[in-house]
Length: 391
Image 1 (cartoon, one colour):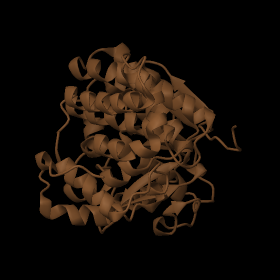
Image 2 (tube, rainbow, N blue to C red):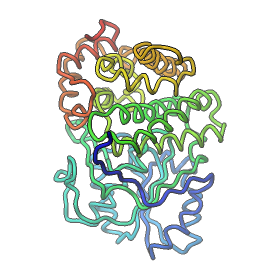
Image 3 (tube, helix red, strand yellow):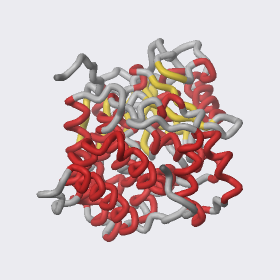
């Protein structure tokens, strides 16, 4: 029996090769005179914003460039971008980049329009005002940030905090696979794994799981698992890149409505403290968390197993669930993801700190199908280090 639920998604999605070269037409409909392009220096120097900038110029729209965004969106960068947006009297915010870039743009569009301070809106539903029109174009197939109501910020204490509000969902999500062709293999792998985790955790989320998010999660996992090895082997495979981008977006819409859980909660401290890319952080503890969850999510994992491994037929529920965990581990190995925490410089002396920080991610842990206590988090990290298996 299906209970009551709500589902939120962007009002407009453009999925097309070369779509970023059409932003001038889209933005003209807002009557904008001046646009802020939020991006990063690497993205811009790689020429990924050139088509959009030319499109804006052709439409006679002035552009202010803010390209100081760096990985993991430090709060001071967000605040600097907001100040620039206000000073330049921006009408519309456009962003082209990875998840951190898009998250920054969401907050700029909101904070530049309201008197709210960033420190006041961390949490769920605290951003209640209006925002500037917002268009987001991802350059990675992973975060799904272009369709979610979530923005993650790194605070001055190196803690990752989230702003969650439907106000942050953009007016347009622009999916242009050409923007992902230059991604290095390690970024392709990390972001691809991240997107798959979004789909898995949305499907098994303890709260807000619903039929629409389930369908998006299953479709996303199918697209991602079928193409992630291909794009890691051949980054110029535009069809595989397109399927990854579509899968990432569908996974984003799934977890935007059925939120992620313990994998992300335990990954955040790895990224924040040791500066490990978010997708790698997820992959490093993915199979350990999946195994930990088996007692509570066995049926759900069994349902996902045939999507990632066609051999998951004529097996018991328990066998299919374990096969699913093994299949995800195989994908991580094939994509050359680091296999242990030790490979990214983490030692036994760091595990207590990681577990302490993970337990602060209550917004995420509450969604996990099995309760995670401090001792559980410590055991999961220990297994990921190679010491022992969690209960």
